[in-house]
Image (cartoon, rainbow, N blue to C red; front, side, top):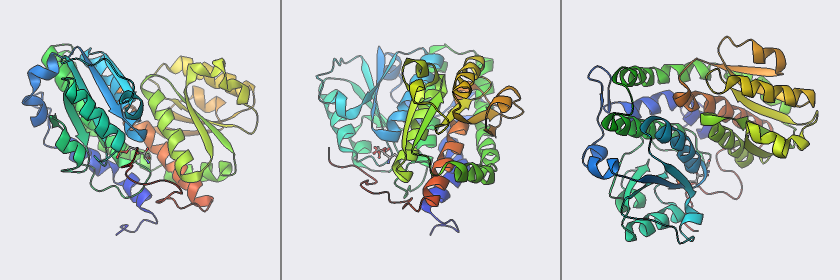
Length: 366
Ligand code: M6R
């Protein structure tokens, strides 16, 4: 049932090329230059007339929402607010019938997300769901939606659900961008073709697994970790830190790299591993100077870089390469090494990777 893997989590990490492909297959038509999504096509007016999009979710799905904020604003020029469902539902939020709420949930059963949907519906918003489990409560409660086709996710730590959520949200943003005309036709075709190439690039990233295992062995006894990223890769830093906390019980925090000097830099010494996402297209020079700041305080640097990088390689203690890609698609690649790093650290610490203590796969109570 684990397909030859030691744990469901590892199997699910390795399923990502297939899961991402299944999620865009049938929706993406690069030759015709279109994206087909039934739930979007049938509600196009409502989605295009949105004054803003509110995204509500919890945990890893909330991180996918943060990535989507960058995508929607950057590509479709629609203002986005990303909310913890648990805060949103109790805040008496301002919602109008011009708002669109996107609820993201792997299980489709998360109590707080479900309550956020009900509240938004009562106040007239149009509610769009991004779920993995077909026929789940959230899938039924939303006006329309688009499924991720990740397949069953058994490991409590979400992996393939996250990358497939990002895939669906990217398609949705691109489709709205195309309808709104905020994106040039040629660039649109280019990015569709690039999406088609992502599963192969994810496979390339997975080839770094033996190297990541060596890095894991060097830091498995650390008591703290910092994760840093900017732009599209800031939410990836949050997600990397959550993965490590959940399954290895090591305290970890994710931060936007530039926030480091507003506090967390005080934590850095020779015992602090810092995972930095430093790919070429995302504010690269600025991240390099953040890395220099860490180095001068003797922090240990594990950097996720673009293939062929030289500058960061000179500064970092370890580099993990990912293939080159557009910044907007880079979270689909940069997330993978962080999943593997937390997996190996947790295994080396003897933790129950698939069923970490105190956690449930779907949180049906608030
Ligand atoms: O099923 P959902 O996507 O609604 O679940 C949300 C969170 O409970 C979930 O992502 C949780 O944070 C995971 N254990 C993270 O790996």
